Each structure stands twice: as structure tokens, then as C-alpha cells.
Amino acid sequence: MSGSFQPGLENVIASETEISYLDVEKEQIVLRGYDLIELAKTVTYLDVVSLMLDGSLPTPEWRNALELSLKTEYGLPEDALSILRLLPQQTHLMDALRTGISAIAGYDQDIEDRSREANYRKSIRLLAKVPQIVAASYHASMRQPLVEPRQDLSYSANFLYMITGKVPSEMEERTFDQSLIVYSEHEMPNSTFAARVIASTQADLYGALTGAVASLKGTLHGGANEAVMKMLLEAGDEDRMEPLILGKLSRKERIMGFGHRVYMKKPDPRAMLMKEALALLAAAKNEEKLYRMCVIGEEVMNREKGLYPNLDYYAAPVYYLLGIPIDLFTPVFLAARTVGVCAHVMEQHANNRLFRPRVLYKGPRDLHPNSASV
Ligand code: ACO
Image (tube, rainbow, N blue to C red):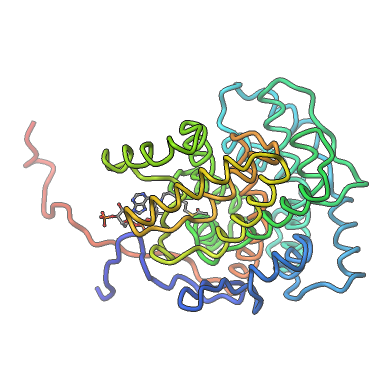
């Protein structure tokens, strides 16, 4: 059998794609030809949604039409909300999100249609409903009344509003929108790969997305943003940051929010953008201490391990200052990434070949039942 074994599929090309590419040499994340960071600085999340799903940035008219179709799809079936309310209170909110997405699948009349048009319609429905599942799963777990979506707010403002119950300021809305952009798509992370593997069997978009949720929950992936915030709170002060990190490193623990399979020894451009956003937000909210703690952590990790922060490191304190509960950091990441996953599933369905790799077998051979010891 030909083919070499790469643990963790490191550097293996798994797909051809026209969606995105990490150009590590140029320190650029390419999204359908555009620089993700430039997009985050100049357009809105809905523009990026259009870029991902339609293939180009929208005209103002098209953008309005997209916003309208999303708003038309706002709202969750009452039975799906009841399922969220019935979950045990300690349910991890990524598990609740996975359940919520499964619960609404049966309401989608396009579920078994893999055509581009049907996948597009399903993507719009998911983009409209996933933020509400995220917010509702939190309020349900807290046994609080749910916050209904508001048509008069922008997509991002409404998402934040459904979580916090407060209409965000212009600065909060813009910062949150920017975070959704930088989380929207990132080439072939574990969760997107999981979704493409699932979609390659001709499974449906909802199934592929729930697989991505399960993957993203892990702390080596999206779950890191929650772990970062817990570490910052554990440190609590600037002078506690360095000893905390050094202690963890001496115990051979991973420091969440640092390192990346693709960037590893280069900065993650998304983290640098969120660092800028954190500086502004922290100044506006008189929380500069949190920013300074993060900078100390970054310096210590760079000095000790030569590692740079990834997006989760700076997105976590940004979400904290936006009033998002820590348990929702990873679900919010998934909501932002839903558009990327949808684009990848559409691409997989449009040009499919079943994923079916082989193994390097290391087990025994030539055993026989009657020779087994008892
Ligand atoms: N803390 C301490 N050491 C680290 C870290 C870290 N966060 N990340 C990598 N290293 C070290 C490893 O110990 C290893 O050192 P060694 O060669 O001396 O043993 C070396 O760097 C290479 O690490 P690998 O685990 O082989 O690299 P891999 O590509 O498999 O890991 C990963 C990438 C999983 C992201 C890793 O950097 C990590 O665990 N980071 C923390 C979790 C995290 O932040 N995840 C979010 C990823 S980004 C995202 O999902 C948005």
C-alpha cells in the first residue's frame, strides 16, 4: 500500500478549495481572494456571510436582501426550545448547542436535498437560528426566561442582545461583529474537516454541523477560549500572571490560547486584531488591568516557549468585557464559524469524493480463535 503516515495529518492536503487559505509565509488569511484582517477592519459580518455563501462581496441591495432573509428565518420552534429547557442544568453548552441543531433539523423541508440552492437555503436558516440556540441554551440552563430576537437590531447586535439582554453600544456591536468575522472561517481546522468528512458520505448539512460542534468543543480547538478566561480569572492580577504560567509550564501543562498547528512559531493575525480590539474595549470600560495581564502572558510565553497567542487568547477577554458568560465563548465561536462550515459542506457536496483513508496497522496478525489463551 502506498502513502505515508503523518500523525495528526500534519501538512497533509485534505481538499481542494476556493474558500480560504492560510498563507503563513505572508502572514495572511485569504478568504475568497480577500485578506481576512482587512475584511474585519472594513466590512461587516453579513458582508463576509455573503462572500462565503455567494462567492463575492454584496452590493448594498444584496446585503439588505440577505439581512431580510435572515430576519425572516429568526425564531425557533417551541418544541426545540422545550428540549433545551429539559436538558439537565449541568449540560455543557456545546452539547446543548449540538442538541438544539439536531432538534431543528426535522423542521427543514430541504433537509434531504443536497443541491446548491437547497444547501444555501439551509445555510441561511442555520445562520438565523444558531445564535438563538446559543443564547437560549444559556438562559434555559440558568432557568431564566429566554430573550426573543429583535428585528430592529443588526444581526450582530441582536445576537449579543439575545445573550446579555442588553442592547449593545455601537462600540460593543462593532467589536462583536469583528470577532464574528475573525472566527468565521479558517481553512481546514479539525471542526471543518470533521464536517467535510461527514458531508462526504452525502450526509446532510445539519449532521455535518453537529459534527463540527462536537469537534470544536475540545480544549485543543475552540474550547480553548473558555479555558483562557478561566486562567485570566485565576491569575486575577498582573503580578500573578507570570508565576501562574511558569507554574503550569513546570508541570508540563499546556497554556491555553497559545500555539497553533499551522502558525506554531508565527503570530496568528486574528489574535493581533483582537488584541487591538481588547485594548480599545478595556480602555472604554476601565478594565486596562485585564489587557495588561494578557500582554504579560504573551511576553512570558514568547520568552519561555517561543509561542504566540492564537485567536482564542485575545477573543476570550474581549467576550468577557462584552458581558458574554464564559460558558458561551465556544458556542459563540461555533455560531460565527457556522458560515464557514456551511460553505465547506456546499463545496464538498458540489464536488464530492468520499473520505476514506487507510491505516498503518500495528496490531497482531495470524491469530486463531482456538489458539487464544483462556
Ligand atoms: N502550551 C505549552 N506548550 C505548547 C503549547 C501550549 N499552548 N502549544 C504547543 N506547545 C509545545 C508542545 O509542548 C510541543 O513542545 P515539545 O516539542 O517540546 O514537546 C510543541 O509546542 C509542539 O506541540 P504539538 O502539540 O506537537 O503541536 P500541535 O500542532 O499538535 O498542537 C495545538 C497545536 C493543539 C493548538 C497546541 O498548540 C495547543 O495545545 N495549544 C493550546 C490549546 C489552544 O490554544 N487551542 C486553540 C487552537 S486555535 C483555535 O482553535 C481558534
